[in-house]
Length: 169
Image (cartoon, rainbow, N blue to C red; front, top):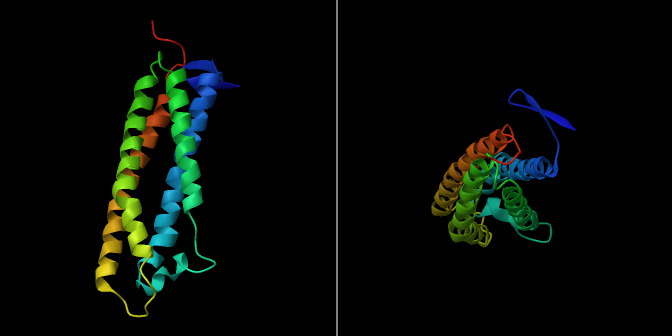
């Protein structure tokens, strides 16, 4: 398969193939995050704890298995891509994304996951808890900021595909 890269045609070698897979996986995370921010969190945090029912009971929304799978796969693809492109101009693009992604993952495990579990684990009540609603709103805002950094870094990752896969001299 041939691609146009800075006015030259390059073939789809294994470096480029894994790079494309890493881009797809990284963008999948963005798509899932955007979906959750439009379809899940506004509803979940609208009238807590009553609105948190979507995470409780036998038929609760379970997004955790998706995130537990997609993060290691994406990180693995990024690391393989980095290794394969270590002596190319693409390396700096991949490194920027890995640094951004690892930072986002660390912050996710330190703040986002524990806070989310704390919020959605609140027992059912039909009375709206304003403090819980405020915590949910803060979580959404901070999560949108985190997602914005990942979104911008995806452009960095994709722009690295325009660089040659050949080794630097």
